[in-house]
Image (tube, rainbow, N blue to C red; front, side):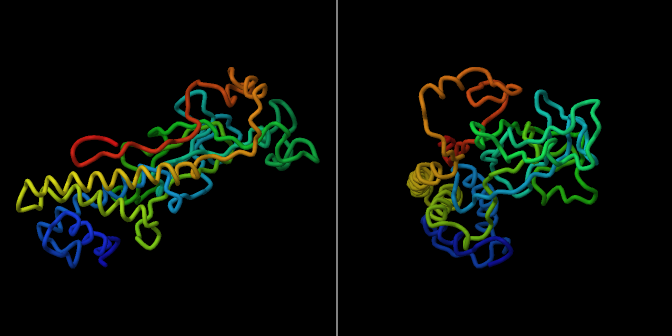
Length: 297
């Protein structure tokens, strides 16, 4: 294995593409290796985004860049899009943000304007306050992915290696969730962490892109491309059914018709009600998978 390129996975794709050679080093510089490397990273990243793979699920606190309320020291106050109050840096290892768990009732708004500021503004304004209230379970917060130029990347950032940063700005998450945590799909580079379904999908998916350009018989290469597309689609579809059902936000709420009806209108607290349909997302679905024949699955 050379670097992060798993040659055994690459050679499995070569076999599935009907090719009669083996790559010993993914960076050996031969034409077959160059063709494979042109597709490997994109196939790996796109496949991560195509389903909520259980093995790639991660949860991590987000880095706060800006607080429009001005109540957080040492961060900016400019959040480019209303009605969002907080801006966070997009995790550099995230392929897809799934949702932001949030309990609005447990969020500390700080001291009201004009009041005496308590010594520790992170503590509740009254003692004995519980972490949440009846009828306010954890819900996915609305969020929006954007690019912001107001908060540049740290000095000496390698723009070629770090995701979501460039001289043109950085990728950010806008939301009203204070002290936000993200549940997201993490980029998993090593096959040791993949489940068998993901590995099978990646082998077939990569094979579908290299079969035609590397085949001596283009008609045969076209047939192998199409058959590997079918295998990749089937694997991804299975993952969307199994991992997708398990990877979304969960709740212990009992579905009661009259309660569901009460939440069907505009939100009660700042437009953040569960049934609201205004700007923002509740959670991120998977992406369509671009296929080697130009279609999207």
